[in-house]
Length: 487
Image (cartoon, rainbow, N blue to C red; front, side, top):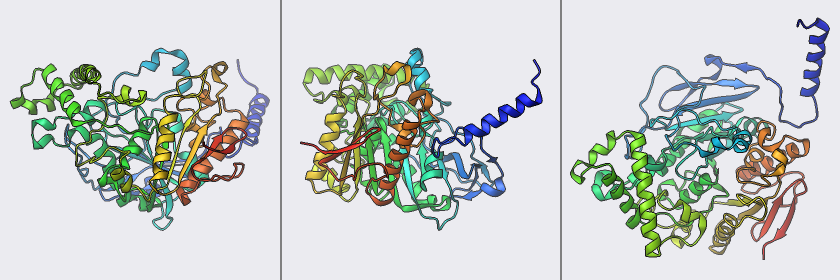
């Protein structure tokens, strides 16, 4: 069928009308795109990079921040002289197959983008509204979820930093780092060469933060005002970074979203997992360097089997953590090795490292229990907030996100990850998860404003929210948000 000109004109008018509808700052319309290297080239210490401009936001993807041999700490990337095209996401860390693809509801709502895997995955992405060295905008570094075993910087639509950069005057950085056996397999019993193998995934993140400190001014960011924020496993990484001497001074504020964590691996058990992995691969201690050439899928299978076996040993020893979250992560966590991570995150020594860092900590109402309040993450968030407050740390702000998605007849409730598109001002962008209704979009504007206000000043605030006092006050975030005191 051929459309008449009047039909095309009417369609265009309807499109323009929808673009001008009162849905707030986030738009559904196509915007201008500029890909000129001349307009977007920025110098980094490793070499120049070119990105693209999406309706006023400069976007750079897949920039190398480091390189690493398997099981070894990261080093600086190889420098380059020619302008490096940086317009698409780089490789993600290899990780297990996502089980959620086989659940149609999850696959629809989450709309994952799992990218392409490669062990050469140390990449950062940057969103900014200015590429002026004197702009000195607050910087927000996002750490993705998936425990310490899965995920990537691009896996959810909600992770896109465009709206935070455009609407809130911050520079957004996200990154990929090594996961599972590649990032946390403890082979330290096999000699000094492997001393840090159980923590190289966290050392990747430290290397990325070092990249931010050295390069972010070229993207308009202020290296003296960096906030790390992450959800689920990303929140666990934030909690861990606050206990790492090598990360001290590389960030100045921290946000933990459903990811408070207290029990990292004891070397006694992480080394058992390393030894069991080596044994399952049929490699002798004298041939330990052969581990570098083992195909990833074979390495992952041996590692997963070792984790199951040593978890059972720890259970028989009575050494499993008391809380459910740490229990299910057991064997797949960073290691308290006495050097990279000297202390467990909840100890007084660890708290002293981040004493001057304001924190924003919270959970969502249901997480994985749609019919009742979350019993898994909530107690840990309260414990972390109370511990930091009692230790005399910088102000702690507590929240609970109660808004429940109407998608799929509301079966998910206020589920794990639901606050992410609100934090990033991406309620419309990820409407398969949020529904994209106008009141939800407005809540997204308020939540993202509170998060970026915290990144800017160390205190969360937004028009439409009650005044947010430090812990023991708690902000309950919903269409009608409230503030109350925790007993």
